[in-house]
Length: 333
Image (cartoon, rainbow, N blue to C red):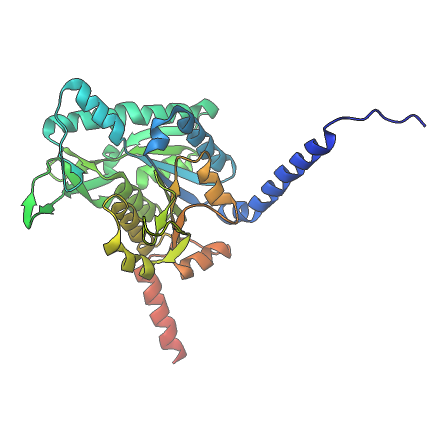
């Protein structure tokens, strides 16, 4: 018998292949549970500024699509807006942590979000196939808003064309999803006065997730997640329910507060799971969705989550669920 020549490094190659296979198998139950489900992803922060992370984000979105999920992207573009305002010589000021958006600044915001950032995201995704369709929140009145009121030192302050979402008409987005597309939506809303408002992308993503009956809301941020007592405590909170989150809200920083409020509103509106993850980590989106450990912080409703993970789970608004619970209780008494 002639001995086969040795292949140096073969055992290492096999071990690496087995590790990859194990990772794929770990994703199997999550692929099964979320196949056909809508996942709304809020995209922003440093993940939007870094060229490498932009490419990785687009790859992750396409992976979700090929894995059978139905991703929807909602984006802002704060750094790009600031850069363009500086370039055209429009002063950018902030009040209560919010950009004061004059009519002149709103023209720039609209141009950057819908004409620049949206097109870049669509282009990166469509390098992998004809998937993404870019729209603005004002298209088909997808998002409608009223002027946002803020209080500074006990008095209301005018911050211009900054809006608070009042309604979401998700039919156009649902139509794109049904057509096998990936909607990419800029956070500009139709105003009650006939114009447009700049709206917080976290809030927009949350409202859209509720309107679409999404199974997940995932917020990409510039931090690892939520910490109980940062910076004194750097232990990440991996999971909490709505009551625990409500108790924590008063202690949160101004940067984290709107994100966690958006997660809370989504779960209260019937989205089983809402996540805060670090967009600076390549493919953190896939780690959160398809691994047992996940990353970041998840806010969940136990009842909705149980239905989702058992395979029965659709979107069931909280009010309806309470009505059904009350009816069931009445029948058993």
